[in-house]
Amino acid sequence: MSDEKEGDELVRKLAELEKKKQAEPPPELTSDVVINLAGMTPLQYAQQLAREAKKYRTPVKLLEKAVEAVRIEQEAEKLLEPHWEVPPSEDPVDAAQLFADIEARTLQHVVMPRDLAFVVALWIGQTWIHQHGTYSSGIPASQR
Image 1 (tube, rainbow, N blue to C red):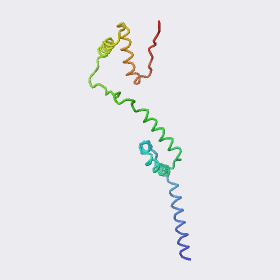
Image 2: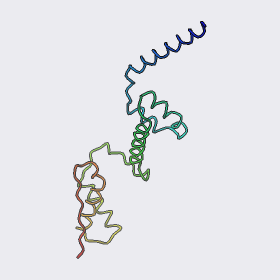
Image 3: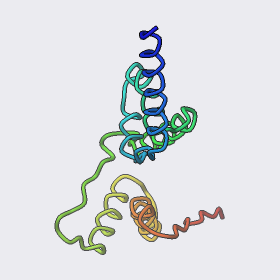
Image 4: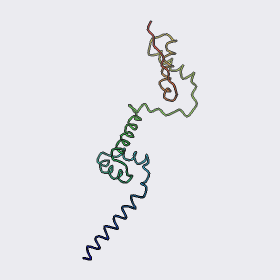
């Protein structure tokens, strides 16, 4: 009979501990946790997802959506070609000289009026800087 009382007491204590644990706020789910999950291999992710959801008291589906959003963002940031990664110049660049060089290079490879080569140089320059501006206008091409 005393074993039964000890068992009941143990169950009561466990229930009290569970109530205390539920009363405590969960740790803050930070973006670092989601980024860490997004960087895992599929097997690691499958093993860790439920643990993290339980730890942060977050629905698994919600955590999955957050991880998917981070993965999409990371994929979008990847360059299509590695050689497109161009480090900024450490020295100031003379824009007039840069566009003159682009214009001259264009005229070496394409037969066109000099004014049109200048427009091509501006277009090339715009393709490299449009992501840094608030607005990016297109240069309309018209047919005659």
